[in-house]
Length: 570
Image (cartoon, rainbow, N blue to C red):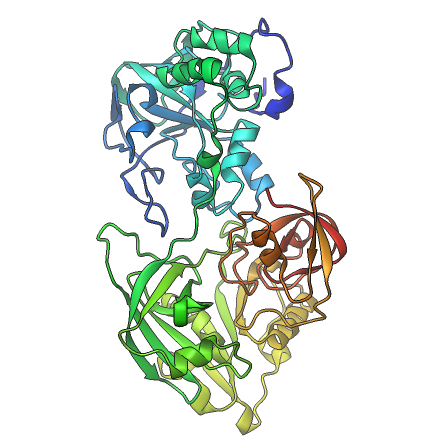
């Protein structure tokens, strides 16, 4: 018989009386066994051991967990949280809900120690005793309570709240009998003492039916339930429902102090700026995501905030190449004319694009870069990485003149073509972009430059049949400006209507209204600020979303509605 693992919405799944018995879980098999060390979570100074790595062979499990597994906080460990399990089939649902993150939503993503396919929050009960392999006996102690770190982990602002609301949280065990465990060991239910109290049902009382006094009284005496929840439910009976909203909130952008240590003119319009962190943390993760950028705060009272691509280095010391914009709003002019070595800047790491998904992208055998002017800075690290891997690549670099071609001396001569306007040499896309043929040396095309270049390249590749996964566009100047007409946005959750004036972005208006919408690049590159589009017509701008994503999302930093639109940003 075929078995499935599903978790219906908690708001509807528990309408049956408490005497309804929970179905027994089938015998299951450990698909993955993982442990992790404490480290910084991404680029934030937040300590976590959620990033766990596979273990091979037999691993010792004692009363506090697997050998080599760490917890950053006392509340994340202890005898009642010795082992965390997650249903592997939930990841299929996550990837449907939040497409473009398959490299994140995969086994191990939730920081689980063990994964299996058929046990879930619906068929596992508090107090259940399981035999694991030939030596170990475990008892289910409590549901995993998701927190804001999941938002950061999955680059998805709704990860923690969606995990809680759907019930796809995982659960903890205490160790009754220690021993050794390895992948492939069987998990088999030996004893059930609370046949009506599934993990899902406890979650319903914990998060949704919070004032159910009859259920709270029963849970306070429930055999096997962890003391942590017994105390919480006992307190709820006497003091009322606690505020758990802070646990789910997003991580705010973290700004760190950097000193400008070098400033050098590369061309008449472009300067190289090198920054080093003022107070280095030896435990800080300084690695960069693909196509990295940073945000700078600078100027009098840090009045300017701008995003720039990282040319080289890491988050301890990095280089930027910055052009003096003809239509500068003050930022690039200040950097070129006023900034001096020794000045201190505030720096925050930019977010990786949510559309980066290597599993959907056929492995390219040829990489073509189509670059306009200062757009070269977006891909210097990528080009270096491909050269180090001996990959096949072509670089087509369009500039005003050769003396304006920044970093030209760092590009490989044998595969770089320069198109200088003052030499009357034009970039012809039809001659450099081959027809798409996935089976015959699939191509990956990268482009950064003015909006006119990106638009022309998009039209060209669409006509040739290129899928969106074979393209990576970035814009250094934001989208090509169309009419900045005012529009209205209605919030799905509250029905509140907010006017968006012509001179403000939707992101500006949402933040002014108190909504915690994460943002990073502010020019439509990264996708961090996207919100759910429920209804209405949108003038999509920016390059972070593909055509399929535009049906359900919009970039609040650059895209604009027509008339009235309905969004969901909770």
